[in-house]
Amino acid sequence: MCMQRKGVGPVLRWAGGKRRLVHRLAELLPAGWQNYVEPMAGSAAMFFYLAPRKAVLADINPDLINFFRVLRDETSELVERLNSLSASKDLYYEMRDNVPTSGFERAVRFAYLNRLCWNGVHRVNREGEFNVPIGDRLPRRLWNPDHLYRAASQLRCARLLRADFEETLPKLKKGDFSFVDPPYPRGAAKGL
Image (tube, rainbow, N blue to C red; front, side, top):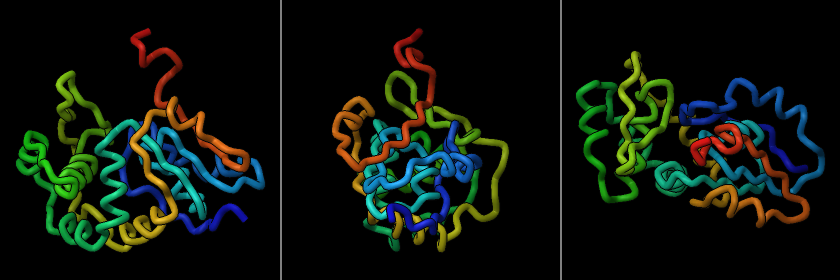
């Protein structure tokens, strides 16, 4: 059996994410794979839906992979810190403008900005600075602690890599299944 089928759903908003399609996509998956590999993880909606027993999640975005690592490895501390925050336009722009140096605080910042940014878009300028404006909603409750704990538990079966898909895909082995969901048409990344 390659899946637990007790998925919790993604904890991040992500432009182009498959949150609403995962149940239909799962019906198309081949049977009999041993290791799930997602080389462009984003919100990892498919991973969180399938809840595989063994997985590799990779992405080129260092803040995304750092967030998943901190959620997995420092769950209680992260949940406590995130739940101490409230939705605020002033705090959003303060956090957007100040990049912390510790991995833990970077994860807090990433999660907060992701929750409140416009349409779940993650975009940086040429200097690598996150520059997405705040969205048009300020929810009263930013996170469900139980959901975060369940997602952290699920991440314990995953190897997390900061890597490009071109580095990840050649490492596939017999028995691996890779869910490849490109965020843009081929060539678009090269300015075509």
